[in-house]
Every structure is written in C-alpha cells, then in structure tokens.
Image 1 (cartoon, rainbow, N blue to C red):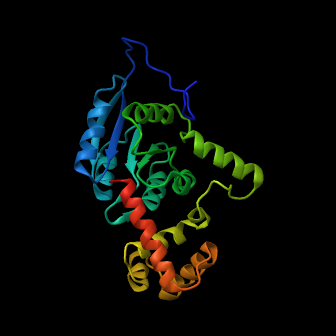
Image 2: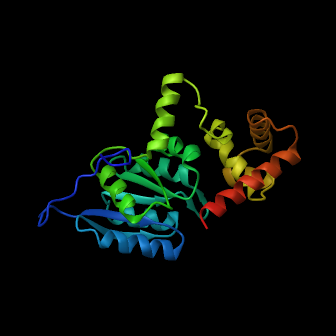
Length: 236
C-alpha cells in the first residue's frame, strides 16, 4: 500500500485512454514551469493551461473546463479559499487539488470544506504530486497520512485533536484577518480588502485573541507576524 492516504493505480503501458487535462496555477514562474514539465512528462496527464493569478484562471475556465485544477493556495489579490469556493460554485464537477507551502494541519480541512478534493505540500517529491493528482482524478480525496489521522481523531472526539496547531481553532474569516495582521495590514486595510466594517474586524480580532490566549493587540500582531514569517520560510 502507498505511504499516502490514497492508493495510486498506474495506467497500463500503451493505454489508449484520453490523457486527463490539467490547468496549473501558481504565481511563481519557476514553480509553474516545474509543475508543467512534471505533468507533461507523465503519460496519462497533460497540461491544457497555466495561470499565475485568479483572472487568468477564470479566462481559461471560460474557454474549456479541464479535468483538474492544480491550485496554489497563495495567489496575488485573492484569498485562495475564497477562490476555491467561487470555482466550485461555478464549476461543481471540476476537481481541485491544492498544492501549497502552508501548514497542512491548518489548511487541509478548510480547503476540503471549500470544495477542493485534496491538499499536498509543495515540498513533496514530484512522484507524490502525480500520485495525488491521479487520486483526485479518480474521484477520491487526497490528504497526507498525518492529516488523515488528525481528521479521524477530530471526528471521533468531536473536537480538535492534540496534534493541531492553535491556529486551527480559527474560523476561515478569522484566519484571513490573522494572516493579514501578520502581513502588516491595519484593521482599516483589512476591512477594505474583505468588504467588512471596522467593527467587524475588531470583533474578529477579539475572537482571535481569546482563542489563542493572547492578552493585547500588540502581542496579537507580534504573534501573527511571527507566524506569517514562518509560513514564508516554509515556502522558501
């Protein structure tokens, strides 16, 4: 059995099946080029489009719907989870596999709730990424064994498991606000970005402080900044 939470089935040599069509989305040109080369070297998969931002994704999908969207969670100008929700609403039959640098224990369940079918970290080898793509294309969900264990434990216990980071307690909107704080945005800027009132942003900040056990605003910003920097280092 595979070491991952999905068993891959290789296409037999000489198969005449149509190659599965994939659109690859990443705002880093070198990463995008590497993913495209990886998929094009795989006999049962092909790349029908590539994009570096949400606008390009929509343009490609209006032309032709692929079998799979291989999506980076961090794109300029839009929250990745919101993009997944929007794509899933307009193209419910399109399978989405998220490939990200962000901590899987925090984001996997969120992207699955949003409508994605799998989550894999960018540091995984190419063979693992291909395996995840095939898994999702077969109609299955793909997560790592570690995350699968956490999700099962959470379901059984009815509460977050001990292996989850405290950040995992935050709602999707609270995580967005927390991430923006870590990126140096003020409450006014966060409100403008998400179309919220300042009062709502302040309410989210209070909820975040309570859930993370943080006493004051300055400590919240400091913690958010450290977390954001750690996330960027993971993707370096």
